[in-house]
Image 1: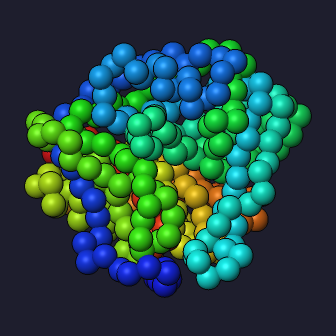
Image 2: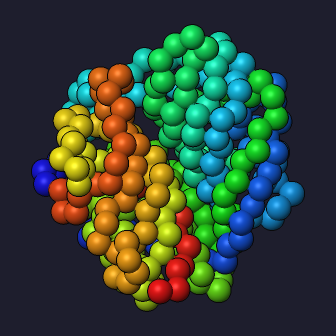
Image 3: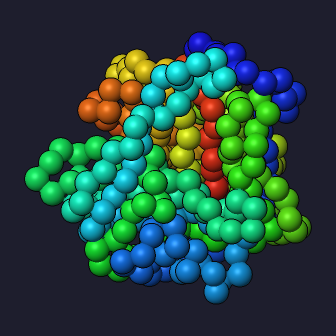
Length: 281
């Protein structure tokens, strides 16, 4: 597992963690307005501090996104490609961490999509410049007591979601951020241990420094972006030793891999933003 040197000072603690209350949510996202506004509008009446949402098979009238790119200078370890867009197509699977940036709602989303008549692609969605063609159902988890708050991160020199405890909760859910240069799978297990949980189901997105899979696949790209498709973390349960199942893209943009990550070989590159729900085992 290789590490990278970010431009800022390395924080001693390598995760943000906030146990909280939560509940399943299902909302309808409006068409014809920016996706970021549609999410804020749908979640606004629910009284949540943050949320995890997923969309499957949703038609879009315009979608804008970027993919990972090498950093142009030494102020960051990675960067973004030029903007990519298509006018008509479909979101196949999009995962979104929804929090705040200052006084407004903000979302960070990774997903897969297919333009009409084109090939499937993956990346980081530009939600203010993406519009649904028809209303879409989004499902996920609403959090109360923990907040993803986007602000400057000294170590990586990016504006990133940090996790803040904003109220005491029941502790059956948690918001988590893993910091760079720790194995992603083992970091998830460490989060469960810190919470005192045997196991948790994990939802979220992030980046790893090259991706190594249990089946031997390798995505040889320093910057990547991934979306968790299935993951159990912790020390208990039948899947405790299996790595998280993800879909991931690198700088090539055309090579999209999926599968279970191997343990001990996948360092978080910039961040991993996660929602955990406690499991009884």
